[in-house]
Image 1 (cartoon, rainbow, N blue to C red):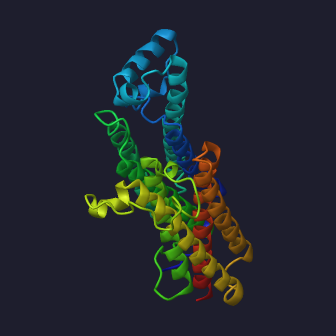
Image 2: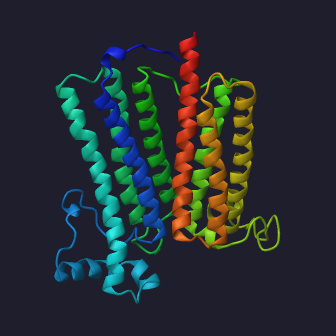
Image 3: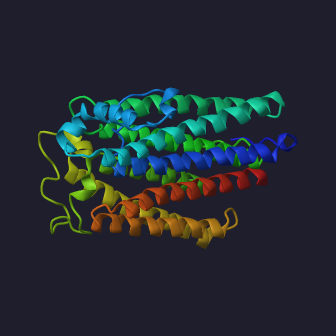
Amino acid sequence: MNYANTSNYYNPAIYIWLLTITAMVLLIIVIGGLTRLTDSGLSMTDWRPILGVIPPLSLESWLVVFEMYKQTPEYKIVNKNMTLNEFKYIFWWEWFHRIFARAIGIVFLIPLIYFSFKKQIQSSLYIRLGIVFVFGLFQAVIGWWMVKSGLTENPYVSPYRLTFHLLNALIIFSILLWIAMDYRYSSNISFLSKPKTIEFYILIAVILIFITIATGGFMAGTNSGQSFNTFPLMNGKIIPDDYIIDDLGIYNIFENTVAINFNHRWLSIFVFFYILFVCFKFIKFDNKNISSTLVYLVLFFLTLQVILGIITLLSNVYLPVASLHQTNSILLLSTLLISYHQIKIRKVKDV
């Protein structure tokens, strides 16, 4: 871990630009979640990175894209009675998802070219932004790879590919947020921490949030949230019947809707108490290295996340609540990352 004072290179415009991209990635994750919750992801059956920005503009063009959708398994098996107006609803969600993703690319590249021309970006930032760019290109490929999984025989996208797509977006978001914080404080803080240090426990919390969100991805990808709409019991039991299906083996974790539902809800409860313990430790014993406001924000988003998760289950995955549940998980992750960065940078400055 090192700390380099590069304040001479600080430019408020670059900082705002980094925050803007980070916020846009957060929004695209939320939009992607809504696209999944509205079952809109398979409405566009081709991938045209440039011409795809132009939506159908006439009745004739709408009928063409609707006819393309009619050739998909989703239409034939799930939505065979869908009207053109109903198709437009899911189409616009997916179209907006893709357009917003392209907008992120534009907001990333054009200022980067400008700041580069003005020679206002140091080499270390170039390297880190280059990594983000590679992840962004990879994300676009993963997105289409995910959609293709639902355009052949199965009318649903692969939950594996969906969760991979989600986690890659979270990685991009986390890297950008970390870069923005480093730039704000003119630092270069290592993301890793030594075991048994205070910041190491926050790193574990961040990792646990990632894992919990991943299990949430499988919940969404397999519609497992609609299998048991009670809490804490599942069909009147703590450990429900069919938690383990012998034929699935290890794949019970990823394909058995009973196991997916059980694992997500109880992993969330475990993470809740773990982060609660970590926050209490900071407030009680080590509040000099971290803002108490940040700690209370973590506690707020943490508690809200559990409440929203329970309501999502009880409401049979009511769309607005489910979307808030996903959005809040990213806000919780954000506050943990900011707290993690703050405590690490304060310790570096004290050295």
